[in-house]
Length: 190
Image (cartoon, rainbow, N blue to C red; front, side, top):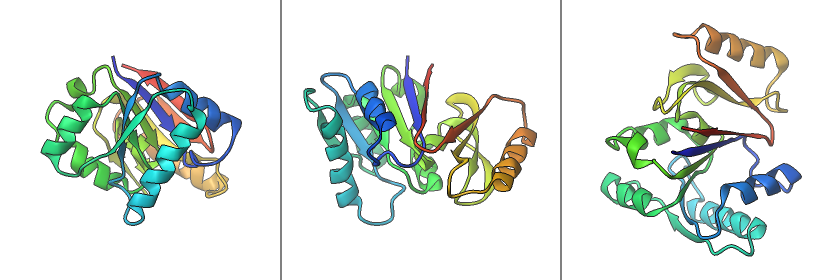
């Protein structure tokens, strides 16, 4: 089984929700693969900040970290040797471009914990709303859901959220819609 955590955007904020989130996603001996494909700049700084965040909330656990390669062959090896794959927010299309090239991704992710933040949380769903492109898109189909992040946040208005929701509801087939509000996360196991 694969365990998925979908997180909104501010995983770096100090909050009780984030403390619980970071403690729940880690086992005592995890090897964590941090994916930064969706980021345009400051990848090294973001890797260090993400690693520090994990260690801050899990100081008694023995965790190791690796930055994911964009080379598909290398990435596949990294995924197989990691227990937790963490996708940092960024451009969902860049994540889709890379992960869609991995054959049999669903089976490769078996027995892994997959953690997605913001744009990274969208690609695994069947259908999602992309804030970057302001349209509905199809994801990698691993979760039979429609997903939208940044729900009811200070970055969007009520009318915008309602418009996005309507677009998701009307797109293609009827599926459960997951709305992820600010500093919240959802869990799924398949």
